[in-house]
Every structure is written in C-alpha cells, then in structure tokens.
Length: 348
Image (cartoon, rainbow, N blue to C red; front, side, top):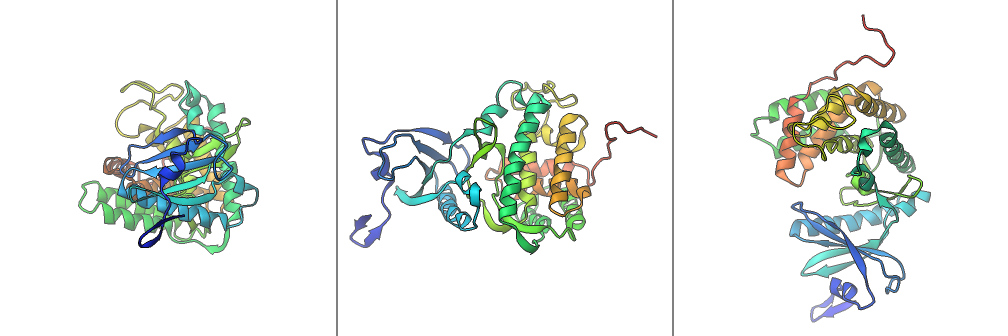
C-alpha cells in the first residue's frame, strides 16, 4: 500500500504499469465522453501472478464509471454464478492515476465478437449471424437462470419512460417517442417477468468468443445491476446487432445480404430489423419471441420490448448526439408492430 502524510491512500497505477517486467497491449481507446483506456497485461511475471486488465479513465465521468464497475464486479461475483464465473472478470484492486480511480481486474480469454462481426460479409449470411445470436443467448440464458429471483420485476418500460422524459424535456421528438413508450409500458404492465441480475450493456462488442464460437468472457460491467429486468439485456443485444449492419456500406447503397436495407439516415438497421422483411428481421422477431416465452412474457410483446430497449439507449447514451438520434428514431417508428406474413403462409 502507498502511504501519505494523511495516512493510507490508493496505490498508483504507475507502480504497476511502470514495472520493467510488465508488458501488454492497449485494446480499447474509447472516444465517448466517459472515455477509458484498457491495458491488458500480457507478461506473466507480475506481482499478482495472473493476466490482468487495467482500465484507466480519461475523464472525471469515466473515473466514476470505472469505480462503479469495480463495485459491480464484486457484487456480481457474490451471486453464485457457478461455471459462468470463469467468464466474468474478477476484481483485483483499485489504483490511482492523477487522482482518478483505476480498475485492475483479471482478463477473461477470447476474441471479441466484434472482430467477426466487422469482417467481410459476416453479417450478410444467416448462418454466421445465427451463430452469434445462439452464442450470446446461450450465455445470457444461463446467466439469467443462475441469478433468477422469485417474484415479478419492476416496471422497466415505465422507468425508461420517466428517464427519457427527464433527460429530453423540450425536445421536439419527445411527445411522439413518449407515446410509443407509453404503449410499451401498458402492454408489458402485467407481464410478470422475473427479476435477474443484468449486465446493462450486453452488446456484441462486450462478448468474447473461444475457438468453438461459445462465449468465453463478458466485459464492461459498469452498468450492471444485481436486480433488474432480464428484458434489458435481451433487447440490447438484438438492437445493437442491428445498429451497425450498414457500417461498411457507402451512403445510399444497399447493404450486402439484406434486401431492402440501405445506408440512409440514422440507424436504418434498427428500423429494418423491427419493421422490415427478410431473414434478419425474421431472426430478430423470432429471437425476441422465444426469449420472452422463456421468461414467462407473452411473445406478442416482442415489439414493445424493442421500443423500451431503444428508449433505454435514449435515456442513458453517453453522447447527446447518439441519444438524440435514437430519440428521433423511436419517435418515427410505428406505435404497434407491423404484421408480416410468416414463411409458408397464404395471403387472403
């Protein structure tokens, strides 16, 4: 421990990172308002005797997020995850860099799902996309089962609605967006969904895969909660997967593998996933329906869960521009799900 005239204080990050025998790689350099740098120690000869991940905040807001993640890693570990514990970083200690907290945790193994997602034509093929969905929801289902708490959970859509109103009061798109969240709240009011632990940012960039394609690690737990609605993580994964489908397409052009999807406007992939036709929108809808059925919620509420998921991004986005884009997207979506013919059905 480091000491000062006033007594005990946190050790400094420099004491760890400036050791001659410590080597590693910088794997993340976020540009968000709460930007953080993540340094993975690759050398084995450390004072801890294991591979570490060191998260360094670049701003005061990031410092608060890093401190919060450290607390959540401890709390999540106490939930009794069983075999899943190996996929969750273990809190090691908190250090200090220029007055800001630095989180040191164990580094979980695996390759980010985002590596495959952004590889050429990965999201253009149903088989590769379905494998990503299967891997993500296999882990999530096990996580939710191991942290399930008896009794109905809180009114998640209602909480989202209040948060959106509080953040975006006066925005021109708020009335229309609120109308859609009100509809979702009303439809899910009596859902009776159980309470589970929640990751809070369950998107493909935070999932690590092993050589078999299974999830071997889940990172970035700063938005986690011990008790919450499992619908949150379910919605976040499918929405974030849809959000970046057009990332490698030139503006105005059709997205490879997705008939009817072009790179136009903000987040066309989400509108396509929720309102379009084709194999990907069908996968999104069937995935949400299946997950809701397993959670004891009517599959008919799949669209309401998606709307609430968009609303959560609106309320919690770090960057105002990103949040405003989702607010306007939410306001422009239909209040109720569009009806589509199922494959093999006949139209009357």
